[in-house]
Length: 377
Image (cartoon, rainbow, N blue to C red; front, side, top):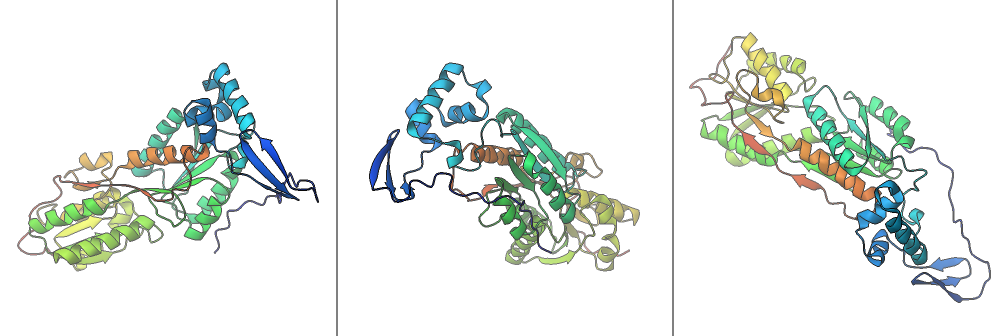
């Protein structure tokens, strides 16, 4: 299936073809010389920073003059508009900077599952940062379904100025197509050619494995997440490399879904070949798995140590309190809004390197020393 998210739009061409057959001349447009040869004009594009420097103000003030004029004094706004006109600055020189009449001041965030506390945190943090930036936020819950995500984005596309995709289930190709039509930031997914902000679990996983090894554990079971999740692939790859370098054995059990209910289905395959330690794709999976172990008469952490990933609020409230890997969810969501706002207002361009924020291991009551023998039901 092809993720065709590009809206059908009419062809747009050169609105200023010039005068056919005109002789070579030099025109003056503000402070920039323009060479005209036949139908072709050559000039260095005037940027928002050029206007800001000439006006002696910050780029954000120039941006606000065009996008949110109510926040800039009338005298300052008039001076900036005059200088922009003299320099030949045009908003449509740099798509997708839109005029005040067409700017919605609304961005969209697409989350995989709004019932998951992780995505609720992403949404809340993004909304707070949007309010700081003077933007509204449209929330789309894809329900872990690529078709729902694709169709919802298509419907919302013309209403938003940009998009944040949080753990998107779309293909890389589909996301690149979407990025051709709308400014976009990928959250917790690195895609070549797409700006992204990523909470990296690698540091926390390294600390967790080192701690489990110190406690005498020699084999770890990993309860995996959705196959379509980029983070799932990265966590498995990191965990495999870490266990290999520390000499620990690693096995993998797939989960039907990264939820409390999905964890119960992992119980039987785990008990058929148990290990003394388990690391789950996320906290909800870990909490559900502990409940499944308790239902089977297995004690945590006396017989099995369990580690989650995310450090959601519930992880410190369950019994036993869940050992986990803290991820900077709120920070990464706020950073994504900040980056998208900067792109919309052209405060920086051309930097596609991902923003990487590190994780850390938090030890609580669900982990401890390895038992002398592996428990069997």
